[in-house]
Amino acid sequence: MLEKINKPNDVQKLSVEELPELAAEIRKFLIRSISKTGGHLGSNLGVVELTIALHRVYHLPEDKIIWDVGHQAYTHKILTGRKDDFEHLRMEGGISGFPRRAESACDSFDTGHSSTSISCGLGYVKARDLLKKKYSVVSIIGDGALTGGPAFEALNNLAELEKNYVVILNDNQMSINRNVGGMPRYLGTLRTSAAYTDLKMKVTNALQQVPKVGEEMVDTLRRTKSSIKQLVIPGMLFENMGLTYLGPVDGHNIPKLIQVLEEAKRFQGPVLVHVITQKGRGYAPAIRQPAKFHGTGPFVIKTGQPKKMTGPSYGHAFSEVLCEEAGKNKKITAVTAAMKEGTGLAKFAELYPDRFFDVGIAEGHAVTFASGLALGGLIPVFAVYSSFLQRGFDQLMHDICMQNLPSVFMVDRAGLVGADGRSHQGCFDLSYLSMMPNMTVMAPKNDLELKEMFRFAVRNSGPTAIRYPRGAAWTGLQEHRAPVERGRSELLFRGSRIALLAVGSMVETALQVREHFLKQGVELTLVNVRFVKPLDRELLRELAEDHSCFVTMEENVRIGGFGQQTADFVREEELPVSVSVFAIPDQFVGHGSVDRQRQLLGLDAGSVIRAAERLLKKERSYDSVRLQETTGES
Image 1: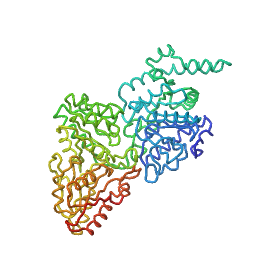
Image 2: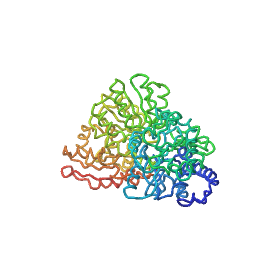
Image 3: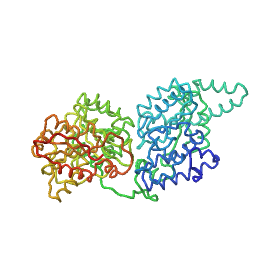
Image 4: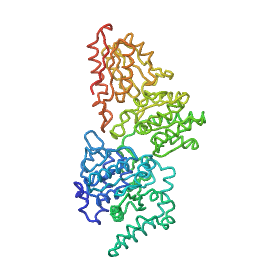
């Protein structure tokens, strides 16, 4: 069956009886393909039948299918002619692991973060109606993403919509971890009410057969808030908000899905179709360990074990020091936005369940919740991915920093993240955190330093952010363990002429640069910046006395980053040094390996070495040097 799918809408040429076989073949293809490249497996295995039904009912690219987050759109990509591209999934030059409009006209919305699909879909509907077009719009959102504030804001805005718009609630009781809170409990009651939907569908189908008046009677029923409905499904949140509710529906029964989607397509007004799916369906290891197979590297199909073993991560180091310090200080609490395993909080949750809080996919709420914990006398530690913390920007500014509240933000996946690409690159946190008054911003060079920074942070009197990269922790330079003091950098090696000022993950690269020049008899100074805010102004002034150039290195955008802050300080102080800034240019960075991304952005050791060689050749006497700012070889 899969060989017959080569372009959009080919699935409509198959018979309904052939579709289950197509689903089985797609599952085998996904498991085989992702075992080689890595990617999001569990979420994609769960929506195979749903995606087939969508492509059966809707015609692409005319109709618009909008995936929330988008990590579950692999089957959608296969059905729109991109099957052969999976060999290079999430690799440089290959297809993205998320929907990309530049990749296909069948991708309606570039996404990567949660809870946005309903808002976008509603915008599409309004644009369609204003321009008098006829296409259909359907948004697919998971039950985990439905805990996000933007999803509720969009649902509230749907109430007065009079034209057709279908929202599919993909309910697998999971985001990355098990869902928490009131909405999952409410959906649990709906899962037991299939009898209501079956009855409604039977009544609707019967009335539609009545000549002349049947359709009118159906329309009347659709507009009626039935008292029977209230008895069968207590609360009926969605219908009370103005949506017509259809479900729950077995998300792995293709004929049933097609029937319900066809019915939803006929409604005038917003419709919510509640679909029950199983995350990881068809692959036992993904069912047993849904968090592990949410996003995975290459793995052995038979066992589910990773093909490449890595050392302990920064998240592991954070987990150890958090549990250690929490054992000494009962005021330390931990907060996550549905990322307990991913951010290293699982052990803390096991040891101190009363002090662990999972707020669901709701980063903005998590930040303000942390402010309440701090005001109540506790020490909140919010562990979150860099790109997800962006969603709590206003709350960080207004609710945390404005009140100067003692709180700790462990910013994981900072810098370049590789295969997840544009939506998940943690390249902005140094800039947006540094601009906030009262915020202290730190970055460790290795795992031991992360632990020391955390001990400093829980004792700091104001908000503190510690940012660290994805993957295995670097264990180099562990003999260099100067005490962590507020606003003080660590001078690792003292040389002359050029000072390498490296932030966090770039210390390893800077060490490679220094070792290259040592072989040529040139000894460069190497500084582990540690504090991006506040700047170590005292050290910068001292180094300016016997150096002609500062080379700043960071995995962050140039605008507002450490390098630009350093250049501004040098200019203000009129220090006799030039500043060469190695940072990410003003652009979004695509998917590929981290090493290759660094090369393309001019952040690898080779690029810095070539720039430093040019600087040494052009070196002038201090009294004739003027301030220069360069941007590496980006």
